[in-house]
Image (tube, rainbow, N blue to C red; front, side, top):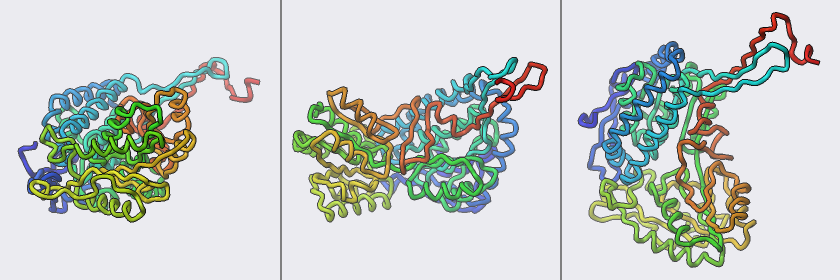
Length: 497
């Protein structure tokens, strides 16, 4: 597939051109001279075709035995494992993050596929005693129907797999709109699904913009659930658009994640974690460490160590195995990062290192920015409150544990947080009191695993979770079943008194 620079939509088991007749280019953010591929600039007619295919395929796919669906997913996982290096190389070319990270991205998709393949022999409900004689009670899961996915560019195979695999194992059908910056990774996943036996119409992919593809997908009445990962601003609009039809809606949105460093912490470990959390994926993770708060007794030492680490990072094209941080995804994101750096300066943050776009040589062909650290950041500053989605770390200080907890919770978001301490009592208290969906002890704010639920509180999400068995609740309805074998008319809450 990668030998052909022109990629098509995948609808009803076939690769087809958009009805619009238009295309768009996908270029390497580390070297914009390099064309990754040409993709379909789709429209509402393409979405309609894909949804129709999914709606028709649902009639038979929902009745296909779940263990057999699992066997197909297992084969998909095996194929992705065999193609891991190729998919990783292509992901680095289209997204920019380093090979070590794209290999992890593809592995996460593989892990989720294996995990959900196993659920084909579970999809557990419950059995429970009835309050009446000779009556049996149980709960079972039922699929919803057509699922629409709007996926982001920062994890271009992992997150689509998080959504697709639990939907498919449950008996739903799928229409995916990949991010316009990273459609190739989704195309690679869809191609493997097709080749390993997913029937026509069960999985469909339509590339293009949010306005031309995402909006028609959300508004189509045949789509019963929308799963969206992206900004809180767009997620709010998605939620509003789903509300009139009572369409199920799963939102995974922004984060302003914090790492707490106590005075008894292993500082070398804490700095190593903060460096990875802040600058891994060029800070372009919803779980990125964007706030670091340190006890005043160790703050100066931590800042000194962080600056040294940041300045030593090797930045460049992620296809080079020695590179530690790649580019921003595109010009708009680079401009946003640079804008926030200027805001940080204006608001009174002390720029300790970085703060500039990287230029000269190969940097001129990509969207590179220096790893940036601000100290003396107060809770009133915009760089403390607003998601930047780039390699910018804001550092503040605290004197007491209670103050640290208050500062950690001082955000509109609630995705991820961590604490570095040797005090088990503080670790457990922080785990209890920091209001996030993910929490780490002596580890950075990034590093979620597929067999635990993923998601956040407050403006990070709307209560649903991705990954693990929690994801099944997004793509299923619960049905309570009562079987009365008494041969008589029994009335609950009346005849049991």
